[in-house]
Length: 65
Image (tube, rainbow, N blue to C red; front, side, top):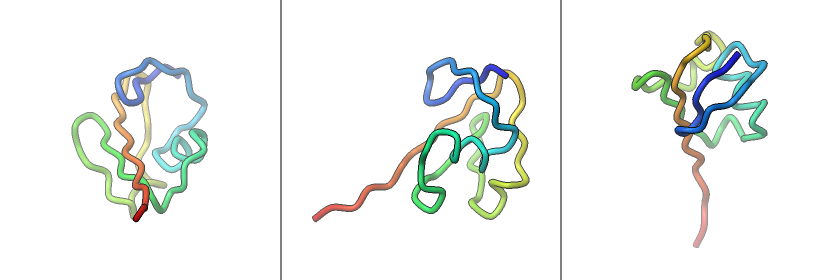
């Protein structure tokens, strides 16, 4: 299916937010995800479906010091 991830069109096989984060190779514990302008709580990543045309924003937290 075709969605937008961080403003860029992308073809993905993922059908949930959790599957998308994993498909992108990101650590599920260190990201915040917004789907169609709504924050998706981490506890709902596995239950939140992604559909064709969705707009997803993913922010990855990084530590430093």
